[in-house]
Length: 117
Image (cartoon, rainbow, N blue to C red):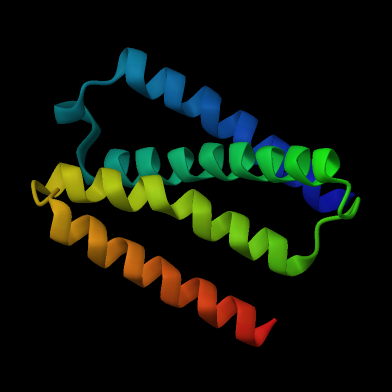
């Protein structure tokens, strides 16, 4: 499927970008655009990993062979969790309340995906 190839290319490019960024650029040199690029590429990598794990789970369970549009939206939602947790940690507000609010936010988005699609 064309969508799967695009996700693989985005994940591979994101992983290459992350490795280059983490090895050759210091956080003070990166600046705001570097931080934005870091979080964007990290999201691409986690999205690729999440979709690969979901496909493996579907194949092992024998439920169905193809992922639906709703499944891709759930994968985006799951891939966004580590990004939000890392951002909360970088802002210095990583505590039980913040994690609880992030989980409630993601639960509400999952409920919206379930109802709309």
